[in-house]
Length: 322
Ligand code: PAF
Figure 1 (tube, rainbow, N blue to C red):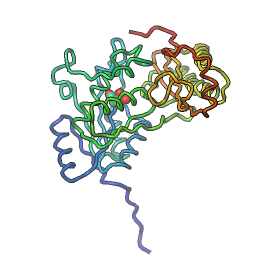
Figure 2 (cartoon, protein in one colour):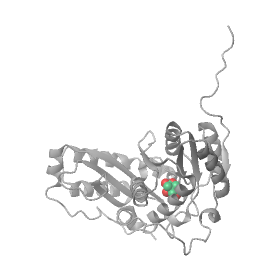
Figure 3 (cartoon, helix red, strand yellow):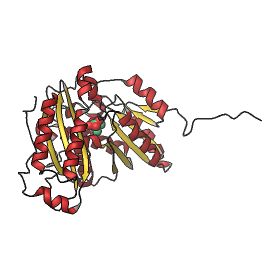
Figure 4 (cartoon, protein in one colour):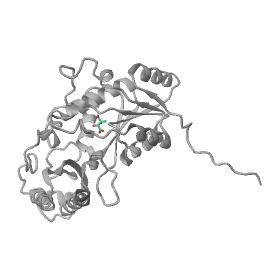
């Protein structure tokens, strides 16, 4: 019997790279001329399993995949972690070669901000950007919307993929694409978790060993809150308050825990059945965010909303760092 040689599945592993817009546009034009569909995965590098899940989906839905790595300065506030954001380009490239990508785009600051970042054109998505994380990070979502729009304009993808861990970011981008009539489908992918429940994030690297042991409490607290909501155990304001107290007791500095409509992050009313519980909390020097979705039966929705607490910004406990 002749020997069976097993070849890796998929396209040739050779990945193209572009570090400037003209190189990127050259390849994109070739693909467009050939009639290929394109999916984009925008990242800030330090690739982990969350990014790989986006990449895998991108490869499933499009003929060609582009992944960008760019740590975008304008989405970091003063005193935030821009300078220490983990950069692991060599490891990232190895992972991408292994999982399969067609084009890696790694622009520098001059490519994406040719006029600098002091006085430049920005995209602002009002409303959605000002609540929840936007309260403590007032420039953040405008920074995200601006850089993502530059990537979308140049890559011209049919689809762009983002993780639902950053759920507010996902909705900001969806709204921007809708309002600017951009011809791209924005796809959200479920949160990817460590076996102990901690949502995977580059910022988990800031946790000390001790903090890393505590961090999964976030997901446990969210799951308890979700059960309380689903089984109508408490009113929404009570559920939020209890979650904040538990976070504090575990050693977190909670920024907010808030129950919102999944669709648009507004405060729920009695007939809303698709809800999300969103949370941001500091543990040491790491600011962690997470969220879970809860689907209510119509009768449960009525019961826990009434009496309707103030549907402001959820429980804000500490002032945001500057
Ligand atoms: O989620 C991220 O990694 C970033 O906010 C993004 C979408 C790549 C924009 O810089």
